[in-house]
Every structure is written in structure tokens, then in C-alpha cells.
Length: 207
Image 1: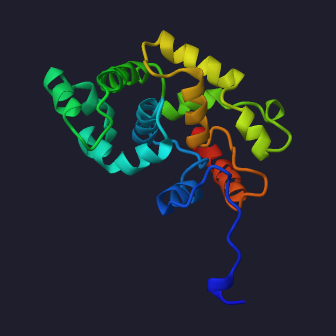
Image 2 (image 1 turned 120 degrees about the horizontal axis):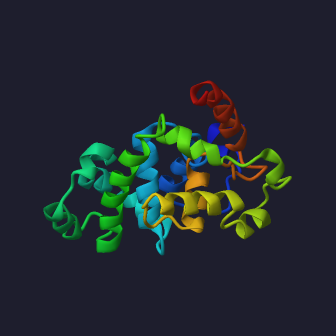
């Protein structure tokens, strides 16, 4: 069988015909993240995604990175009124003033959180659900019914108490999926095993 006639690998149902979406699914979604800058980026982008499609955010991600100083927490925390106006006028990103102001606010909240936590990773991974709390099998039907979880509710509540914005339970469940805090690749998905292996390899990093 030639490479051109090889069967298409099975992917999760939400992947469309976009190569950008397939690449994101195959190499990033569901793989564990522990770097503070990447975690902060994911928190911000999930907030911007609220009410929009994720492919819209993916197409704008490089523009978001340029506009938000590569999501460097300390730099974004120093953004002021002039930066808000600059961002509201930036056609490359989602020009929602409330979400822009929330991202800046969340950078300042992240700085405060890091005063008492070793890293954002150590904070977020405390909300990893027990394997016994997860569905026995991750199927298309199970995924469609899972828009939040007890853990995403708890994470949302804790972040809100710390002053974070645009961190509702559904948004936080999407974050948990994106950062690999849960592995929601379907059982038959060709990426699922690799995501599980990556999670196992992360254990020494988290301590």
C-alpha cells in the first residue's frame, strides 16, 4: 500500500477539514502543559474563545501572541490604558474590551498566585481528576455531554475567588482538555496513547 493510499487516521469528531485544526489536535490538544507562559496563554485564549469557535482563535493565535507580548505574565501585568486601546484597535485579535481587560487583570492575578505557588503548573494540576471520576470510555457521545466537571467547577470557583475573570466552569473544562489535565481524545483516536504517555512523563516534573 502506498503512502497516498494509507487510511486516514481516526481523529476526534470535532476536527474539521482544516489542516490547522488537525495539526492542533494531533500535536497539542490534550498533551500536558507545565510551562507558566503556555498555561497563561491557554487561560487567556480560552477566555477569548467564549462564544466563538476555537478555529477562530487558532487562526488569530500568532496575532494574539504578538499583541500580548507572547503572553509573558510580567509584561502583560504591566499593560495600562494605552495598551487596552491599542488592543481594542487591533484587527488581528478578538477586539472585545471586556476580554482584553480580563487578560490583563488575569496576568496580575497570576503574579499574585505565584507568590504562594511554585508555578502555575503546580496550581492547575492540583485539580486533575481521579481516574475513577472519569468515564470508563471516552466516546463521541460522552464527549458531547461533558462541558464541565466537578473539578472544572472547583477550579473556576477558586480562580474567581483569586480575582480571575472569564474563567467559568465550561471555559475551565475546555482549558483542562487543552492543557492535558484530562485526556478527552476518543478511545479510537490515533493521538490518545501519545497523550497518555506524555502525561506519564510529566510526573517527575510536577513532583
